[in-house]
Length: 403
Ligand code: UD1
Ligand code: CA
Image (cartoon, rainbow, N blue to C red; front, side):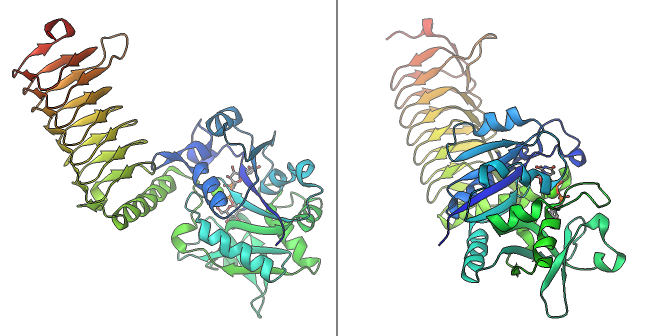
């Protein structure tokens, strides 16, 4: 099998999103869109990634900076997808393998689809292969033009479509695999001869077909996965689809989610078997929850929280950046911030940690078996020894605690 690399296009500034943030950093279920595309490539066995950045490049590079398999390539002016790929010319000029091309604004991509695409491309010794999707509402996507034998003739952008071409339902989700040398040869010949005055990558494909190379189009992308996010509406739709996938994965792993549409779980959250997530629960960030817990209804679990087993977090309880040992209970109206809770600690209704003194964040440590009476405030920094009982309605600071 020949070597393969991927180019991910992420330089655009996205006027349609009306945003200052680079488009690919907009989040879907807690992670930037680009992170999903990178993951899909890695999971499909791609070892080297070239990511084209331009608008807001510092921010994009900063986010992924520690990733050693990425080479950042700058596209100074955004003159179209074909021009973006050409920016890799110096890096890839001598490369004799296959080059995958994807867009950073397509977070719903799956590694399996890429593997199918690569496998087909290599097995059939094709010069260019693209994965297509059939959409009931193809508006906004490049349409796949086939001849009467079903062979692909080219891709026409929505803006350049005739009314007849607009009715074509087969679209280009922008998942391509090219023989690298064929790709760059074609790219050197494209011109910005279209409504948008851009250098289209899709024109390179047409030139490859016209030169008589073997080009395949496989309908390999599920309609649900094809979405390229160009607007805030599409961003929210992609979020909904991704949320469904996250919850399906967790349910397969033995987590009960009582009311999936009214629950939100971050892509990075881990939840153990037989934990029950009750409705209106919001789990955000890199959170870890153990087995046999009951979370919610209306619980808010935030970044940096690690929860042991058999923990109960009830209605309107918020936990942030805290470690909760096995058997902790906080059933009603609590705020637990920057805290460490020992085994079976019981936080009464409305008891909170005051972790912020107006200037800085302080930590709270609560020992095993502590009972914090309802309505109490623990003023951080504070350490409550094991098995201490705090009377309801207490305001407790470290001076109040006698060891
Ligand atoms: C593109 C495809 C279209 C396809 C659709 C799928 C072309 C000409 N069109 O259209 O056929 O149906 O994706 O979602 O390729 N980018 C750069 N530099 C540029 C221009 C774009 O890096 O100069 C990046 C953008 O950041 C984005 C991606 O390329 O991540 C796609 O660009 P976008 O403008 O969104 O293309 P579409 O119009 O959606
Ligand atoms: Ca797009």
